[in-house]
Length: 161
Image (tube, rainbow, N blue to C red):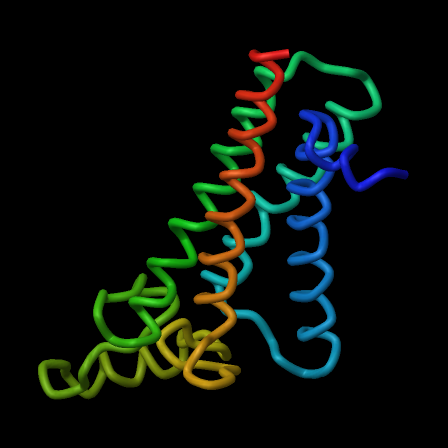
């Protein structure tokens, strides 16, 4: 395979789909070694799965390259979730009630007990892993924006050629 093949519309689709598949595999590997995902982490996986499957369908069944725009949408959805999750981790945004905790000062004892009993084991507002200040949610957002560019580039190149 020639490196120039990767700059064709089909090559760009293959790169974007493989990138999403790699992100999924990486997330599953982290989970396997003990980093349990929170609800937002799991939500970020679904668009990657959709993008990877879509890429395979485009390549195998030679679907029209306009379908590459659906891959871009999937990548942008998971990128947006990654940005949101990053903000929740850094306490910039309030996270979903199912994934974060509320300050106990304004709660009755019964409400506080109910919150503790119903709390998820893995909270979205706590950073499970980071390196040099970069979290998994940060990495997902960055890579996913890049994958979106690849999907759009595949569509643009297909229109030119």
